Amino acid sequence: MEQAVHWADIYAEKIIREKGKKEQYVCASGITPSGIVHIGNFREIISVELVVRALRRLGAKVRFIYSWDDFDVFRKVPADMPHRDKLEGYLRFPITMVPDLTGGEESYARANEITLEKVMARVGVHPDYLYQAQKYAAGEYAEGMRRALEHRELIRTALDRHRTEPLPSDWSPVSVFCSSCHRDTTKIGEWDGGWMLSYSCDSCGNSEKLDLRRSAGAKLKWRVDWPMRWAYEGVDFEPAGKEHHSAGGSFDTAKEIAEKIYGYRPPVTFKYDFISIKGMGGKISSSLGNVLSVADVLEVYQPELVRYLFAGTKPDTEFAISFDLDVIKLYEDYDRCERVYFGNEQMSEKRAQKERRIYELSQVEAVPEQMPVQLPFRHLCNLLQIHDGDIASALARFCETENSELTGESLKRAETRAECAWNWITNHAPEDFRFVLRGVDDPVEDLDKASITAIAGLRDIVESGLEAHTEESLGTLFYTLAEKNGLKPAELFSTCYRVLLGKDRGPRLAAFILAAGGERILPILRRY
Image 1: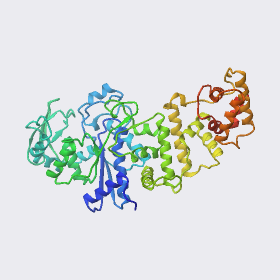
Image 2: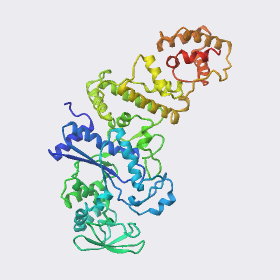
Image 3: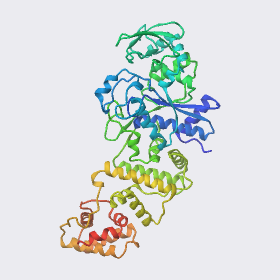
Image 4: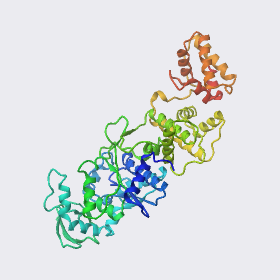
């Protein structure tokens, strides 16, 4: 096996080295479904999935768990959420008790969970989903809560070490949602040293005793809940954002609590950086409303490209998701990576080794047995615009001009890429990149005599047949045609674009005409 050159493989080796040989390794990720799970949150999910693949490549059995922290409190209504006024009436409730006001799901939390779960399979991510509200309600964490209460002072001391103001003397590691008003505006009272805990509610005045083994309202506060679940699930690896990895942050306190209270050695970890949207400062945030979901990104980037964005970037590197002309370059970079993997493009062996591994990790499932037919993204965009977004016609034209055939996996990938390309053209491409081929009923351009003669010369070239021409040979004829008619090349190109597209600029002219073909170009030229 090749030496580990990818960060996922390096961490897989580290996990085995630090955790020792195990029958099964557990890799974990999770989030509170308080809003749309955005592409920034996805960075943690995909980072874990890449390490899971790397572990399995080493022959390890791995369980990949994704915890929905849906028993967390609903603290704030995200800025972009509809029915904000109604949702604000459920603040301080557990998220599983907030209703889904936009659909038919059982709760607001479940609606956000399903949205992500449906899209994960599209990018090859298949975790075991854990639902914390269910696990607390089933009493699975009762022992963890009891142990935290036993060691309340040790936990408080550990947390105070990293606080500017100490926690109050009556602080409790357990919080309770009131059984009457469902809010967490409660104060913990007496604990009997076993399973019974009393509380009173500041919102509604309700007070009662509950049994930690049977109550659906009690839970650990998150800085204690996190290390408790490491121990309960046997987590060997879990990354976290850089804010959690700051000195004295939640990861530091979780490590101490895991070791001292739950007798568990903390998981291997790393910190990952923020993701932003190009043109928008700062990290992506649900609460701020600048949310870009995984589904949104898949509208423009085919699944392999989404994985490539993360597999090809170290987790501690900040980067931006772009929807401008960078999209073309990213597709070109991925295609080059693919050619390197299949030996169709050469580079230094050290770099090629890394590119091959990135390509493997970019695949949704298995690596194709042979290189799929590549459709250059820029060329595909031109074909789609020539054919008014008709994907079948654009792909048929590609096969005709490239003397190629799209079948099986190549056809599937080509159709997906074409859908993404058309979405990008329609919704994101710069205006000067877009064009519409002129129709025979559109107004003709007002041209001078030299330009009309030059267009007639172009018509003669096209009528004589484009099959014998390459982009280079046809481009050479344009310069000859310009000189023959006393025009500067730039003047001829501008005239051709006005005639064909109704604008002064457009795609590379020779490539464009070859892609469009005489059948679509000649009716326009014959009007002059």
